[in-house]
Image 1 (tube, rainbow, N blue to C red):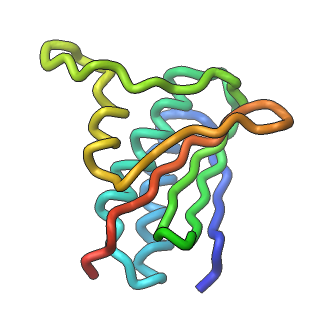
Image 2 (tube, one colour):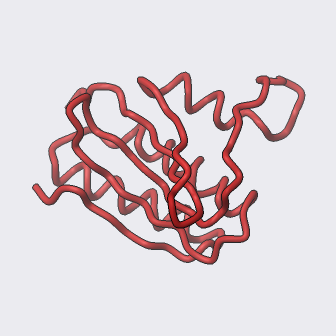
Length: 126
């Protein structure tokens, strides 16, 4: 098991699928279910695309003491905030959805600028 696993993607629409497919491949090699991780990565990379001016995003998967963590790094200093889950809105529910799927999630400003957004995945069922 290679840990952590990491990929850098250009911030463009097709990179969401690239990151999703990559995290699925990594977790399958590690013998873990990738369903929730694929949703997490899709949401976090989409947020980089929609809400930052970052040219690239780094996606990393690590085995921590508490479990498997998915991290997405970008170059924006603006930290994401989960908004209220408005059923009539066409957007803005992603982080609320993410929070319902994972054990916990959070953000961390990076010393050199930018941030990491991370999610601790639920226990694998594989």
